[in-house]
Image (cartoon, rainbow, N blue to C red; front, side, top):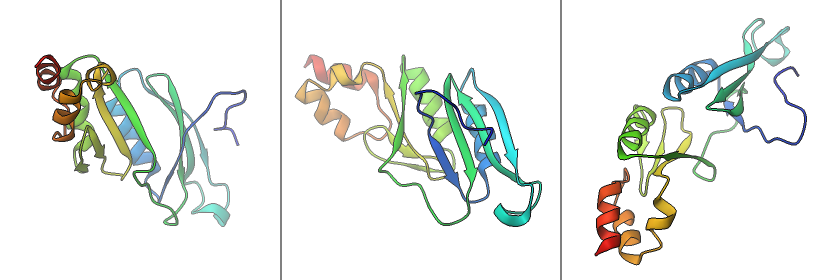
Length: 156
């Protein structure tokens, strides 16, 4: 399959019902430095309607992914999520707004996008800050992470 890589790198393989192309276009619009790499179209009706996209290889800021139009058999759940480490509150806000649009917000920086894929949108400093029990407690009450609030809690 032309969308598979060789070597020892890991490529998340994302199973969509029939909207992989829509999802890829959405993710490419969210993440800077992203691009569509390759696609494989159905050559017969065996894996879906002829000439429709079967797989799409793409990169989000250097991380390679493959999206599959696999049918309705499997759905995403919270057992797997992708972490977006942000350098500023502005970046947290931007990714949170884009990724949660049409999806669902959860606790502690987690959200599901409109395709059901789980993301954690967090400040890069989060692991350091939540070593402080007061900052950890503050984070547990948040949906979108508020960096300034965590810093205040860690200093109190």
